[in-house]
Length: 345
Image (cartoon, rainbow, N blue to C red; front, side):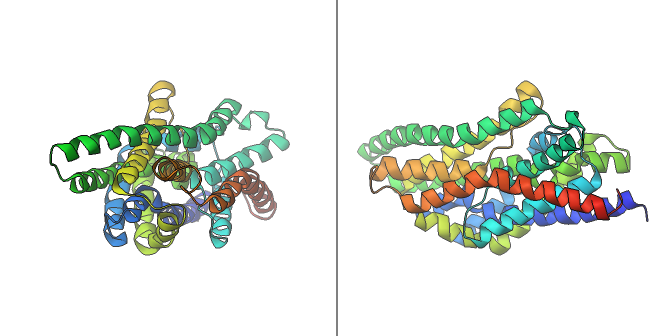
């Protein structure tokens, strides 16, 4: 069997594993607020997550896939794609072992950057698109800040809406429950659209070259594969992180939960869609950064700065985010170097 075909098959298996991790670790991002507010059980929240995350991955997943597949670096060879995926997976597993809500977007982009940096050290200076890297780095800072700002704005607007509905005799609790459920669906859709590329984007060039098909066809196939992995991960282990994020960072009511989830969904969708329309590639932001930031903001604005959130836990989480870039990039550089010394490529 041709060595490229073997690497492609192994790579797709690794890709499914990364997608499974996405579902298992990040299912909490669209669902945690609704579970925290007692609107939905974990089981029902995960079913909605599975449906709409897979829909987002299939319909819009190619937008971010293009960035990771041919954006940070011009192309990735099959062995490099496998090594980068495994590196991201190892970092995610390590952070999960220590109980940290890891950013899969940040882990994957950092691993791909590690591959590109190794190429630079080997003398291929054109292997890293510095402009795209700067843009992604900026998004990792602006995304949570933007999410917090949107959450605060949403909270005050929705609070006024709740008061107006109450004065007119409407059932405010019931209204916001349905509103929050709709936000879960939108947030899960946005998650699937933005995050499926983290599991599959590095294989766009490999599949296109191997099968001799356009990138669009490769991205469609990879979107379906990634969607399947995300659904499997969410339905099997998604509850683990939901319990942590839904109850330990803060506790929300239906109004603050709705404000947080709508802000998170809108933030992720905008970062996925607007750059694609303007520049031709979607921005792989962290849905974890965006989600946690929205919940922190909702806790602060609804309960006050001092008692709104568990700051000790938040500092541990932020620390894990800071070390993800050098950690995943370093593992990727080392693994790419080792594998290329011992395996044909």
